[in-house]
Length: 258
Ligand SMILES: [Zn+2]
Image (tube, rainbow, N blue to C red; front, side):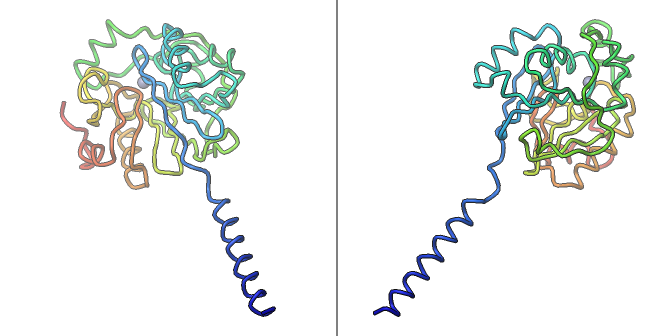
């Protein structure tokens, strides 16, 4: 009888230990919430804290407030703002977001001169539509800011509550950044455009963005990501787009004709 009890106790202890092991599984994949602002997307990555990706245009503040309230994010929840690049429709509210949240701004080192000037460099159009946009639609100015973290090498984001890393991938601009989550989702800013007319039509179809400082280097970055494990690409305009859609548009080594 005593021996049977000992066997039972050992079994129970084993089951208990197995339960404990299950309880220390990795944390669940973070939520990704995308807000479509006036010209561009702002993404909130909600892990144990919230990392914001990009900061809209300077006219987007009321819309941003409403969007964060809609998804239940308070300014105090925000642990970092990563600006994928310092174009006016991605860096517009960076200074204001830092004032409200107290969170540091991370920016690629190569884009720091644009952030400090509050004005982006002359854009290099990749097609006719882009030339028209540049001339009539895009205001190059935004509130200047000094980045808190200048990124010039890969960094983990765990200290901000998100399982992933930020990686410099210059091409669209000299300091462009990509955020790669450990679960295979990446945020690539304007490396890729989703759909047509800034994402208004077919936002899930990958294509070439209107402007690149270094078009070939940008394409090389896309190929680097396609060789990695990214399965879903979140974009600055339109998107998200699947790996298959990106491979269709860029896999042969040339941008898709538009
Ligand atoms: Zn851009």
